[in-house]
Length: 116
Image (cartoon, rainbow, N blue to C red; front, side, top):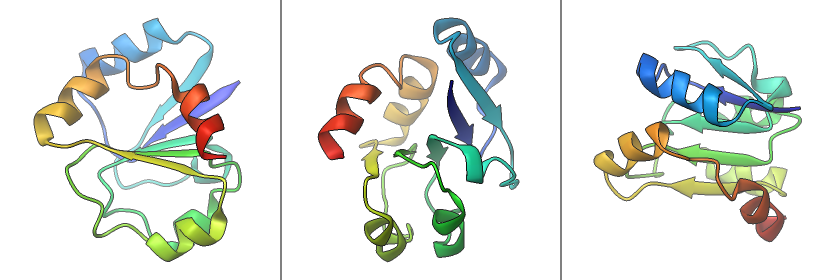
């Protein structure tokens, strides 16, 4: 089963919508916690809360979704070194809110395969 780990807490209705729309996916939501990094297939983040060590810990990581407009504070070198990892970021804060509440993972398998 695919595991999706949020490093922030989306609104309750967004969490429920994701769980309902993707019943075969395990979702975990933690604020400032990183206990699920080693087992997460996908990490949803605002970007600045991930470090080089976090990327190294994320043994199963295949995809990072950045729910903010920029990626300048991301650990770029660690992500490149890890390889086999797709990265998506939103263009503006409204996009982030829309994607979290909508179908943010529709097509992830296709996109992940493209980046692998």
